[in-house]
Structure formats: structure tokens, C-alpha cells
Image (cartoon, rainbow, N blue to C red):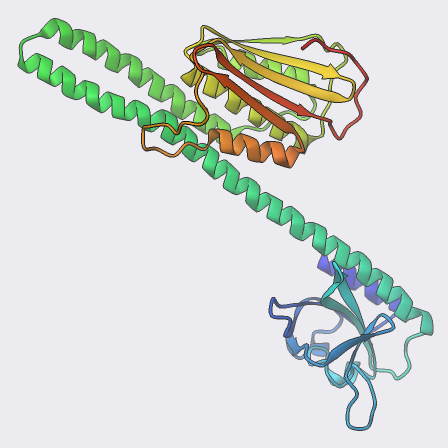
Length: 358
């Protein structure tokens, strides 16, 4: 990206050299990120930024002892012989300067008057692109952290719990055999076998979550059907219902957040609700999509923290994803009667108006 900007700057200005520099966090140094031109035209990769001012859209230096303002004095990146003519346009991001786009020539008065305006416009576009790339990288880092938390929570809440149970059952079976109660020991071994199968399922789920790549060419209905069928391989069964006939197509980033929220909600219901069936409903009311997860299990009291002395991240991650989606996430647990999880949002892509049942 930096290379294409400097190349375009050189072409538009008809200069011999062009460079793009970014300020460090302390705003003291300009660091060279890209250049076009002969390598001997650049004498070092950094230059002091102190004394630079912006005048008529161009970076210049404070007046020297003679009262002259000229960026040729301060720049230590472009070699002096290529600064006989020199223009430096500021890269602005959110009203602050983050760097400079420079062009130079060994010939005096090499640039036409309109070059300064053209260079300033290109610098503004470059700054906007750099800002968008930075925001994207921040979002990627946040997403990576969320996925680490999700995997940690699945391993901690699922696999480690099962392994702890296995250890307890092994000790119990050993004690029963020491006491000669082989009937109870055999029953305990059967429990261990079932728990081992559960542990294997937990590992497969965690691996699948890491490798998961939601298909972008499928409708939301098709994607929810796939998730329901996949999770129905374990108990309780997941039943997907919808009255939306028109296929709902979401943008990839939106689809990923939605499906991960749904998967986490369904897994929580399967693990903790003790319900015989989990219902997954999809409705559209005007422009709003509503996804509801219902179980008829034991419910829980959200005001009470789990008493297992272990961290639980599932709901926290679901809420973080909902915020990123711009959605409302409602969790309504009722002790003894079940839990309702509802995700409501207006998608970025256009959808047909369609009334749906609650």
C-alpha cells in the first residue's frame, strides 16, 4: 500500500524521488516506510520532526535566522542533491499529522504550481487508507483475543470439567475394587467410559471452532440449519424453525459474528440446561432479524456467580460479539423453567420486509 502511494506521487509530480514517512508515537521522528527512486537518493531512514509546521497544506520548517522557511533545510532522509526542489505534504488522520508524503528533484523549480495541490490531495487519501488499515488491524487483534478467550472457556468449562470428573471416578472405582464391591466398580467404569466419550466430543468441538470457516455463499437459514444438524448429534437435540421464505444473505463479517453467538448459546443450552429439546427460531419483523434460542431446562439465576471457582467467558464473549454486530442480546433465565436467548439486529445488507411470528 505504501509503495503504490509513493509511486503515484512520483508519477503525478514527475519527480525524481518520492517517499512516505510516518511519525513515531512520541511525534519526534519521521520514519521512512516507502520510497521510489535511486537508492543513493536516500541517505538515512529517519529524520527529526521538530520544527516542522504546516503552511498552505505543505510541511515546512520554522523560519531560520534569515527568516526563510524551507523544508529543504530539515529533511535528513532525502539526499541534499535531490532537494533542489522539494515538497512535503502532511498525512492527516483525525486532525493530527501522522507523517509526510514527499517528492524531490535535483533541478531547481522542477515542480509546477499545481503539483502542491495534487500532492496534498494524494496525502489525504493515503492518510485515510492508513487509518482504515490501522482500524482493521485493531479489529483483527480484538478478534484474535476473543477467539483465544472462547477456546479457553470451552476447554475450561467443558474438557477440564470432564477430566476432573474422570479423576474422581477412577479413584472411586479403585476404592470399590479394594473393598471387593466389583458390581459398583463395574458401574463406575461404565460412567468413566461415557465421560471419556464426552471429553473426546469436547476436543473435537474446540478443534472445529478453530478451523471453522462459515460459508459466505449460503443464506442465514442454510447456515443455521447446518449448525442445528451438527449440534443435534449430541443431546439435547436442536430444532431449527423459521417462517422466513426469502433467503437472508448477510455480509461475511456480520454472518460470522451471528453464527458464533448462536453456536455459543446453543452449546450453553446443551451443556447446562438439562432440557430435552432446544429450539432455535429465526424471524424477521420489518427490517429487524430476530434469532431466539429457547430451552425448557433448569434455568439459572444471573445474579449468582457459579460456585465452581472457575472463570466463565461464554456470555461475556457473546455480549462482546453483539456489540461488534450492533445488535441487542437479551438473556432471560428463569430458574426452574428454562432460558431464552434473543439476538436482534438490523443487518447491513438489505432484506425484504416480512412479518414473522415471535
